[in-house]
Image (cartoon, rainbow, N blue to C red):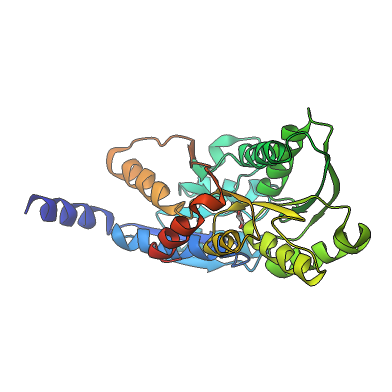
Length: 311
Ligand code: GYE
């Protein structure tokens, strides 16, 4: 009875809240999961969530934010497609006294008060974890790496590259020989991997592919197979996100490692918002999610648990 009363009470207090979420789009399995989880987490708390899909365009995000300001929402969540260009619209939100929460990507602004808090992983660290896995796996042997970068200008593409480059810096046996953006999509990941394979002796000169997300890795796996090579052994595959399909690939011996990123970015942001509105509690500026390295030994269990979570 106590639990019910508490739940009702929480729901009543939160039900007044309306949040506008400017989402990037649905470029990856991870992104779709994040949207789905955001809806579930809003419902749990009795929050009204309005989602605007920007179809990968910052100008659409800026329009959406302006429209949320005009509607007088209680808070604005933004998953910023690129890092720069946010100051003017965030200034408008600040003047309207609407708190802004960043989800999963960061921005470059001179004035940190332009947003209230960010929920994201340490994406430099993710790149480092991927590099460390590869260094350990190749154990001093030479290894030519091709890199599939995320969306150009996004904080995560910049940081995942930096973390990996830093991670291999002291190991001259591991080298990035080619690097290009695959825009975080399967189709582009496949296309770019095909061009890397053609340019590198039909793939024979490539030891590993490092993809900034699992979807591009899955596209790359397809390209490797079509070139008559074995992904996971002849060309190693390491990526980031931990979507169900990468575990399927691990089970089939076609992918080697991923760095997990929770799709639940909205939940912690909702909690911080409720604490801010209810108790006037200023949230932590950077709410960091975990980054676990996941390998084939747990792929079956991980696949199942992700599916059980509904993505
Ligand atoms: O890793 C990728 C998505 O911004 C952290 O964006 C996110 C990334 C995620 O498209 O799959």
